[in-house]
Length: 328
View 1 (tube, one colour):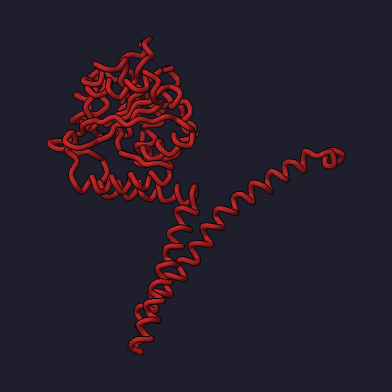
View 2 (view 1 turned 180 degrees about the vertical axis):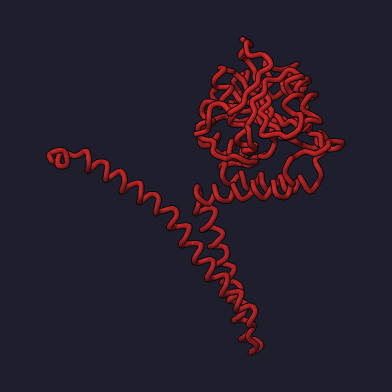
């Protein structure tokens, strides 16, 4: 279980009594931008919580000087761990609404009221920042990677996701209470995990268009963007393969079988017409059929086996509670 509080804690105002809106800013080595982010964010919330994830620069001192409460991980544990530390703090303090935003300056704190409107009016439990059109400076190559992660998250979310990787979000207390115990991801996959778990819990979500800065920023991530995307994609593939083996393994494998049959028919027709056997096509057909068949059976086994184990556990529990066992 995640610890309720990190090993090191400093607070700018420990006697603060207002527990209405909390802003959580996870950060790692953001001394260039964290001060202005805290100062701007304080205008729209009751408390700014900076969760420092093992910074080695002046992030902590600058955040404190700007008026933030600071919780510090003694070692780098990942963005997901920092978000969960902030969620635990929000639950302990009884905050009604929580906003998360990044500390690198790409999000605009002036848009916090727009994110909060829907959840304050009970139209949604979670308000998701949606980076779109001229309001975002996102480079094209980032947009392509984001779209890939959006579609992959949608497979686990059960519906279309517009912006699965935006960390600018707002939550009501109900969402935080239900989500926090279910979150397991420690790294950058936390945003996608929130959406998948929120869908499973039946939480209502709404998309709000927000702006996003990339130009003139020192950096927008402490991790290489390619490595960032691959780590999120790897997490999503593992999660979806476990949750939806038929959709993620069996269906693509069945498509391979169909492709193998198609190329097999083409190879036979070509041989009948020319008496020339296409060895390369035959090898391709064999690969498609073998991999496809294995994949279909693997997906079926991963679907049926957990159900079988669950039934056996339930049967064992019922047997132990029966009068026959109680008599011994």
